[in-house]
Amino acid sequence: MAPPESFRSCLEVNSVTHPDSNSDVRHSVASCPICEQGLCSIRACGLVDDKPSHGLVVCDECEAIWLQPNVQGVHIYADAETPKCPIDQSPLYHGNNRWATLDDIDRLGWSDAVNPDLTYQPDSDDS
Image (cartoon, rainbow, N blue to C red; front, top):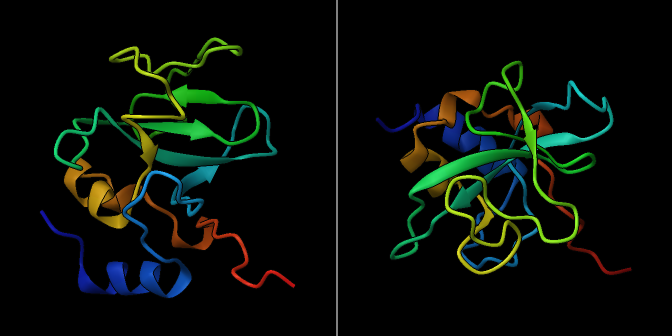
C-alpha cells in the first residue's frame, strides 16, 4: 500500500532520495530509547534488483538494531568490528545494504513509522 501523498510530499520537502548506497540521507522512526542520543534510521537490506528483501532500524550512535520499526521492542547489537545484518549476515554498512530511500520504505511497508521531522540530511553546501 502506498503512503498518502501528503506523507511523501512532506518527506520529499525535508529530504532527497538517492538511489546509490552511499547516500547519507536517513529516514528515521524515532530518537533512540537506549542511548537517548542517536536517531533510529531505516536500513534497506538484502537488496535484489535494487529492492530490499527486508529492513532494519539502526541507531546511528549506539548501533542498537531492531528488526521492525517499533523501537520499544527487543533490540540487538551487531559485532562492533565487523557489523553484519542479523537476518542474512551480509555486511551491515556495505554492499547489499544501504540507508533506505523513500521507495525502499514504501516496499517494506514501513511508511507509517517514519517521522519526517527526524529525517537526517547532510548539508549540501560545502562552505
